[in-house]
Length: 137
Image (cartoon, rainbow, N blue to C red; front, side):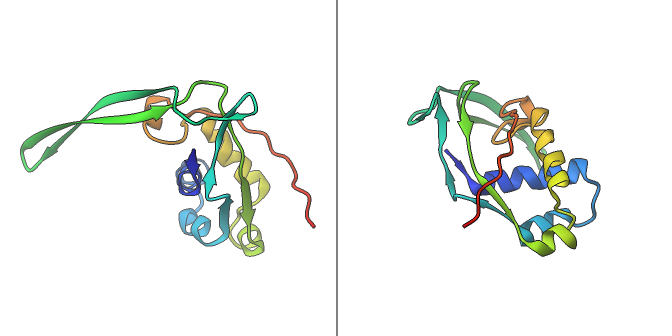
């Protein structure tokens, strides 16, 4: 599963990288929301209940002259995994915040290169997307 905060975190990073808008992360915090809170991962129409594997990697740091090494372990899923969520942008976010559909598509395009989740800088979590219009009641 993914959590909504992971999607928002990706969108903030992407917005900073590709939009060049001042204060864009605050605008996302204020006017853009992801639903549902818990986003299930699926493959071939079935919900994934266990990860496909894990990725271990060393983390190195130099803290006050002391070298520290730790191992980070991340669950991973294989290509073809899907997830679906809704993005809700409040009206002021569109007009005052510049969070238009074009801007959001530009942020999502960044996912083809950067990815979402842990170890995204190692080219993990890259994705493509499809936008569908949701019917309103």
